[in-house]
Length: 311
Image 1 (cartoon, rainbow, N blue to C red):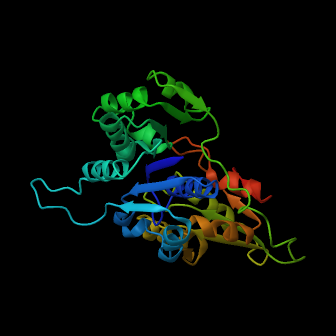
Image 2 (cartoon, rainbow, N blue to C red):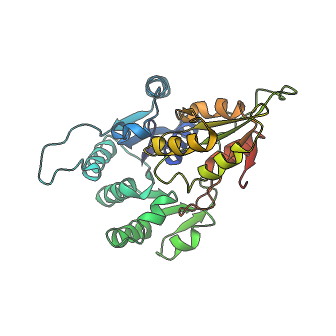
C-alpha cells in the first residue's frame, strides 16, 4: 500500500506530531510506502524540538520515508502570509502524480485536512481524516471555517474519531469509525529500568507544552502540590517548552522559593526512555477547554507507570 500522510511531524512538539511519527513507523514496519507532506520546518522556535535531524534523516535514508517539507520563503505578496495551505496542496499533488497512491491521510484539520481534501477532489485519491482535540474545539464551528470543515468531514472516505467526538463528527454527515485515536507502538514503550531503588526519591514529571494557558494544563496545581512535599523524598521534573515558559517560571519561583528548571521537550522516539526514568506522570487537563485523550497517559500506562490525574 502507498500512503500519503499530511500532518504535523517532528520537530514540531505535541501530540499530533508524535502520533503521526508512530503511525509512519507502523506503516514502514509493515512494508508500506509512505510519504509525509508537512510544514514542520516552519515551527516556531518555542515549540521546536531540538535534536531531531539525525533520526529523521535515518528514516529517510534507511527506512525509505519520502519526506516533503514545504517550509521556506514564499514570493512576497500583499498582504503577505506563509500560505501553508497552498504550498501543502501543491506538494501533495506532486507526490500523488509520482505514481499510484492508495490514499491520503490527514491528521489535524487546519491546514492539513483542508489541503488533503482539495487534493482528493482534484485527483480522486481517497481521503481518510484523523483529528485532534484542539482543531475540533477551535475551528469546526468557527464562522471563518465551519462551512469548509463540515465539507471536509462529510466528503472524506472515512473519519477516524474517538468516543468523545463521535457525535460531533457524525452530525456533519461524515462516515465515521470510532476507535482509539492513538495506536501505541508497543515494542517501544516497554519498562526497562526495573524496580526503584529502596529509599530513593520518587520522581514525578509534567511532560507537555508550557504555553500562555499553563494553568489550564494544571501546572499551578502541580506546583502547589510540590510546594508541600518533602523534597528529599520527591522530585518534580517539568519537561516542556513554549511561549509561557518565563511567565510560568516566574510564578513558580515565587511559590517554590526558586525557579524550577524546565527541561526541553524530547522527540517521540526518546519518550519511552524519559518515561522509564520516572515513577509517575502528572496529567491534569481537567480544566482545559480542549477535550482529548492523553497520549502521554496511554504511553505511561502501557509501561506500567503511575498516572496522576488529580491532586
